[in-house]
Image 1 (tube, rainbow, N blue to C red):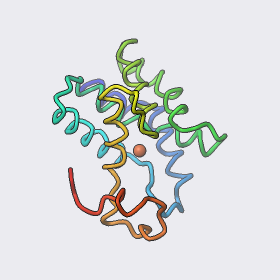
Image 2: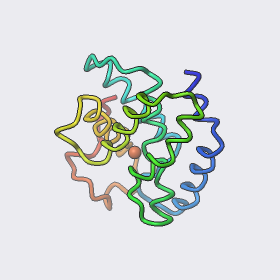
Image 3: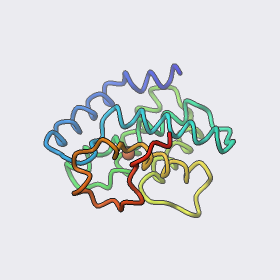
Image 4: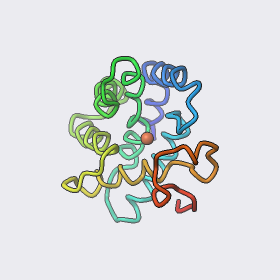
Length: 159
Ligand SMILES: [Fe+2]
């Protein structure tokens, strides 16, 4: 997991997480912090094992850690955050030792997390599911005001 730890220690990565934290200081709904990124990574890894996908663990965690990193850009200038995440991920991934074809897989995973893409690969579909499953609705104080439907909310633990 050397390259994953390199992402965690990347200065730009740390800077963007702090930026998001500042923007979301008063947000009552789900925030986009390291805890969410790690939960998403772990659920994505469990799902990929359950589905028998042979995706490298570091690639899975790279998607989880970076999928929402563009939130700060979205708050700043309206860039859709999945696109902003890819822009920011490029340097971070290169500096962490991921090669071009790995970055391509990670980018496609990041792009697919927000909207379910039925044309996507099995892994791309899982990024959408893992992101949604990683929300802790069962302990959320803003659950009544949230626009997620009752069926979508994670009231019961699945992972
Ligand atoms: Fe997310």
